[in-house]
Image (cartoon, rainbow, N blue to C red):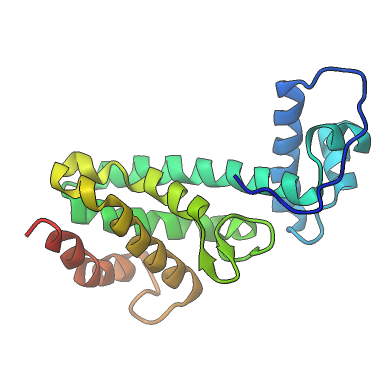
Length: 203
C-alpha cells in the first residue's frame, strides 16, 4: 500500500478509531475527486462532504496524500471488479479474456478520468518516476488471475503476462489512433497483436 513521506501526525481525539467513519471519509474523498478533480480536492472539502471536522479526517489519515491514495485504491478495486465480470461474460479463451480485460479497463478509466492510473504519479500507486510499481502490478494481477481458469498452463506465467498487459493498458489509455478509435476497432486490434502473445504461452 502507498505510504506517503512527511506524514502529518494527527492529534488524539480520545476516541477509538471507527471503521465506519474511515469508510465514510474515503467515500467522500472519491466523491470530491470526481466532482472537483484531484488538484482541487482538499482536506476541507473532504471533511465537509463527509460531515466531519478536519481534525477527525487527520485522526484517520496522516496526510492528504494518504487519503487520496486510499480513494484511488477504492476506485481501482471497483474498476477491477467490473472489468473481471465483464471480461468473463464475453471471453471463451484466455486470449479473449486478456483482450476483453483491456477493452473494459480502458472504458472504465475513461469514464472516470480523475482516476486514470497514469495521471497522478505523486499520489497513486501506478506510476512513480515513470516506473511500474508493485502495487500497480498486484492490482492488475488480481484482474488477470481468472485467465488461468481458462488454461492452467498460464499460471506460471501470470506475473509476466500481467506486466505485459499493464504496458498495453497504459498505451491504449494514453494514445489513440485510427486503429483504436472505437471499442470495436480496439478489440480487433488487440486480437491481432495481444491474442497471439497469450496463445504463445500455450504453444
